[in-house]
Image (cartoon, rainbow, N blue to C red; front, side):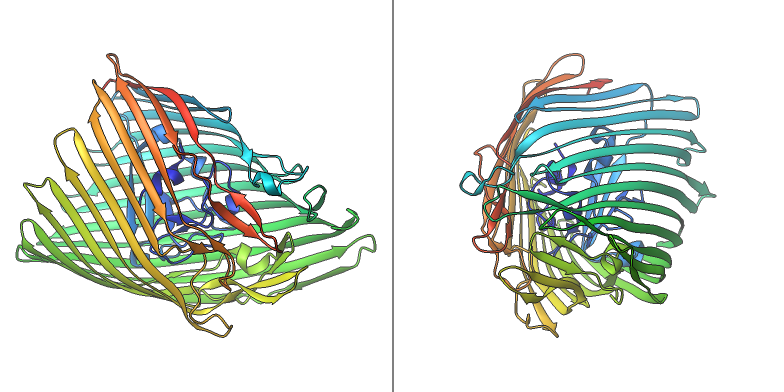
Length: 622
């Protein structure tokens, strides 16, 4: 039902937490690819039609912002891609592509599931002469489930639930056969209860974009985008007693943020070369305004404000050229510059009103991101590839300036954080056999991150754990990806994917050398078997296996392995309607998502089975 759960079928894709975005806090929904490790912010760039989807202040992703019926496809690029995309494309890129109507058309998907979960996604569009218009809406709610297992629950444990609504509208004008200008606007709203009466969060986002794709003569095209976002994020935190029978509100947080940006790209095709050049500019403003309360008395003890601004720019160029019919070369390079300024923190103690704070010096960094790739077509059924690249991620305003406390763990900010820089290489093989009934691909990869931003444990006692965001030193990810699909017939298909990765700390000033990178399982395996004959039967069963992973930098909190199975069964009827039943986590497997100190660790569990029945309608029918 959610886009992040759809993407979990890609081996190597993971979020900071293992649970679905239906119930997970937004700040735990940063993306990781290829075992780079996840924290709050993403180490992979998420786009919709070339426009960033990551939160401007914290770098996480709101997966429900995009109506599902508005999508025409999803692209996933694994491996560093900063040579084209700049910051955040450290581990790869996920891009959602939206639909453009060719004529009157509509798509509706509605269902109802367990945990009192109604869901509706609708898209409608039309084309009149050179104009096209479309609108989409997506809304859902769920009662959710209690995160803590029965043996550990207290009177403060309540259902973790969520609801959201998003509306999206776009108008376009066809300039030529391949050219189009568009104007888009959307609004997104969501709210969540996070498992206790005093913890909840909500988000409201307004977004607008304008763009153009146009041919310039026979050999040139140009693309341009300009976009803006205004957002308000609210969240509360609490302290819960050991027996989980009493809760005290400790923090009320409000985060206003704004983002503006533009991007331009020129393409030129000439004598076997595809040349590309472009630039992009972006500015982010954000702050965290917080009211703090005493965990022991509940009294309002202080007000905190922390935030700043970040301005970035990048220029890039790339050449794809062919030598004969066998060789293809890709050479690209990008230069980025960004500046952090107006950074500050202010604390006002209550009831005295005494103010303490600090303004941080402006800081500037640059990044150079080259890429070189070559591909060799050995035969019509076999090709080899080799790539080397550099990529980077600039720290977010949240990492630089905001400290926070959750339970007995205090995490301090660090205004001196430097950007993460990745150096990577990969070698791949792609083969098709049995008259293209069997398609397979294998890739071996190596990635070193210098100065990865990590929550490092400074001190640890039974009553207080203190951590700080630090540039750790160096981490390394070594691994392999295998993907394959077998087309047994025109309607029967079996596919699978596997990733092995050993991600560990290679160098560190802390006592972490040799430790596994947190939140990275060594083994991930996905599979699917489907019979797809819409007018008779649509049947799909798929599964995901994830190995054990650590939940902390010291490798003391081990999250055990798990496997879940999903099922879809449907049939299409005349007129474009499809009736279906589906189940996520069919066998109701419950596995740990987080472990919270002190001993005995409080376990947050994964969702139980979500079974649903629904109907889809497409006009014109397929």
